[in-house]
Length: 315
Image (cartoon, rainbow, N blue to C red; front, side):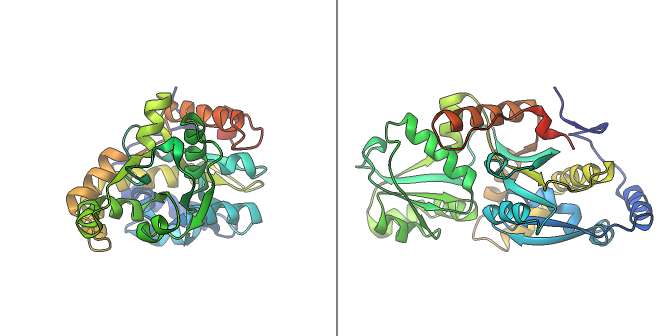
């Protein structure tokens, strides 16, 4: 089943960006609505989704329609809940805790296998079922919810999570294990050999998306574009975000060059991450993954009672 937005297929491919400038300009000039406030994430993984908002030829025109602010994933959800943002890239757990939150169809940040940017790191001599504490990067509430479900399956449901900044050494000084999310997780993997040489400590690095897929057979869906309750929608909004994603995926080379200057990661690491590890289309498999996540989150008490339905995907 395809996820569609008022006749626009989620995987729409755009061949002529200039035509979009004219179309968007007409829409902006014909409306008196204020700019929509967008809460976005300054991590590597959403970079393809934001292409048109940051690059010509469409960024100037989109700036007339949208006001973009940058923050952590968990902060995006808070912005929508408080009414400070109209659209935000939110952890999917927010759907169960933010009344009236809807999904803008088409785009997601997900993984259908190994993701590399969601890690549980533990000492090799401490098995999962014997961990007494986990230092947790609180950047994404959804990742912590997935981790809680996994710990239920691992027979250690009550292990306490200690909120900490994403610093692996400091986290392991405080707790038996650490959860790292986003760019800090990618960098921890890149520094794995160096850390062992420096400390002599043998660690086990669990890829949480891979663990989830092994356990459930489902993709790990991290985030979607969320819409605050009462936000006005039109077909152009769906199209803007889907086509920004499509243009981003057409410009991976430029994104690799840009982000290799910003992060201490090789171009090869960044390229494989954006093209292999992350999945950006909210397809039927991802929708089924979300359903499975919410079923297990409610069953284990990780999230409040919530039934995810396809109605959440409509305006």
